[in-house]
Amino acid sequence: MSEEPTFTISEVAMMVGLTAHTIRIWERRYGLIKPQRSAAGHRRYGLDEVQLLQQMKQLADTRGITLKMAALEVQGGLPAPSRGGDEGGASGDVLKDDSPWRAAADLLPQPILLLDPSGRIADANVAFARAGGFIREKLRGTRFSELVDPYDRSKASAIWRDPGHARRGWELNLRTPMGSGLYSFDCWPLLSRGHQVLVLIGRELSRAGMELWPAEGEYR
Amino acid sequence: MRRLVEALVSGDQSRSRAITRESLSAAQSRTDVFADLIQPAQYEIGELWYSGRIGVAIEHRATAIVEAVVEDLEPTPSDHPVRPGTSCVLAAVGDEQHVVGLRVLQLALEDDGWSVEQLGGRTPVEELSAYIAGRRIALVGLSAGYLPSIRAVRHSVEQMKGRRIPVVVGGAAFNRVPGLWRRVGADGHGVDARVSVVLARRLIAQ
Image 1 (tube, each protein chain N blue to C red):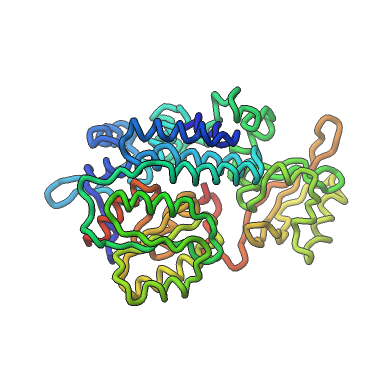
Image 2 (tube, rainbow over the protein chains, first blue to last red; image 1 turned 180 degrees about the vertical axis):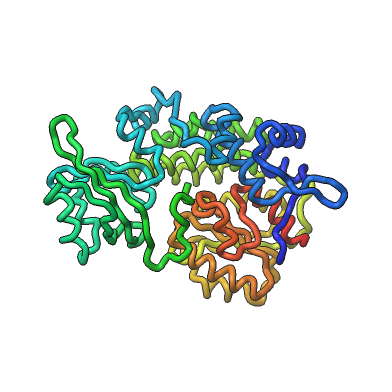
């Protein structure tokens, strides 16, 4: 059990539901995986390579994107594709999202919040919802200070008391359903349709009691 | 997969059942249906919840329908099963209560000839260890949907390693963080039921 398991191409074919021929083609065409070779010259695949193949197949199958695009996304070369073709059908309403701000913000790995002048959350991107374990729609209207550790609340309220000034590296402990964590926020005042909003772009510095939490950018 | 997601989001159990039965009829393998249809659909439902497009009630209703359709699928036993009596224990430890994936893995392993005991969610680490003691267990499978349960998984893996029992981990927490399975000391990561079945065979052969 000390060595990580490796698999033959026929085993990998069984694991990911592809033929060995297709795996060889994907390997050559998309450069996604580079299996090791046994002493006899046979391909040997590790679990990471199995997972890459499985993700690529799943993306191509479920999102209807090309194999080339799927390979690029799995390798981190593309942001997650938009969910095309979702209009209509039973889930059409919930899938519909026509906010350009949100679409752009959702492409970014950094947690991003929009606060109104009263310090309430006007919107958040997916990265923030994921990092904190929130349902995004329920964040709207929530006072940002309610997410902040009581010790840091007066510091947090200073962000929107003087919203005309940008701040860098504003460190706050947040309490979220996923645990408490220390975030560093850069805060930028913006005018949107005549109203002042504050954009908070965050970076997670630590997560109390969770030493196994992935590093920044590692969480997919 | 989109059709199943739509049926799940709209709470249509009979349509969900029809879609999965149709898929089983085409694939002739329950494990393939789990890996190619049900898990991707569940993942998509999770994404909808994460991004705030559906609420927790819709997500829970979808999960309940998934549980029902999983049980509805007829077994498709392997032509080359593992040796009779090869046994495996599956559990979700710590505060982890997401067990649909464990149930799916149980059914996939049973189709492959395994004797599977599933201890369910929120299994205390010490209870799992006590349960394993005195039993001939070839493999342990642990699931984690949330990252906060990872510490309990690591603790369990350490205990199983002390008994020289290989451990496979799986679940959304591991699928989202490449390489996390190594950090908890597991012997392998089953990204879905089909991968887990092949991996399980490999680990008991080592």
